[in-house]
Image (cartoon, rainbow, N blue to C red; front, side, top):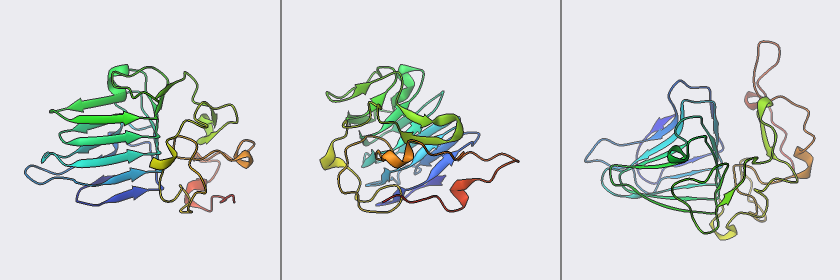
Length: 206
């Protein structure tokens, strides 16, 4: 997904299995992406998860996402990037949150499996983020996930992944904890033998 502009909102997407970036918010100088909001997205299986360019030094926001990559998880290019309430899964501490070309990153209330080079006072480091069954595309949270209760509620999204206004934002990541999700038997990754449930009707739990 490639996009640019001002006041752009990207939410409720599953972005996976692309050869390069899962999503790139960009603008060629002297234009700039500004006041963009990227939230409640699940990004995994891409070469790099997300990059945000703002060559004119504007501010953009990344919150309540689940971003996973074996390379770069989140790159800020130029500008200011506010990063909060995310699950950021990577293997290289320098590539979890990377600031390029003088970018500034404000970060807090994120969960990572290894301590990154940029950390906020309320960030959580946990080897296991507590996903139900990531191999099947089930990135819901288990009841023992360290993501539960780790969010900055006041900085949560206006609507959840399913487009509903959440009563309270207590969990970091793209999905708030729901007990009904824990025993979800589906596989949300496609194969020739089974459908891709993200493209059909995903059950919306109350």
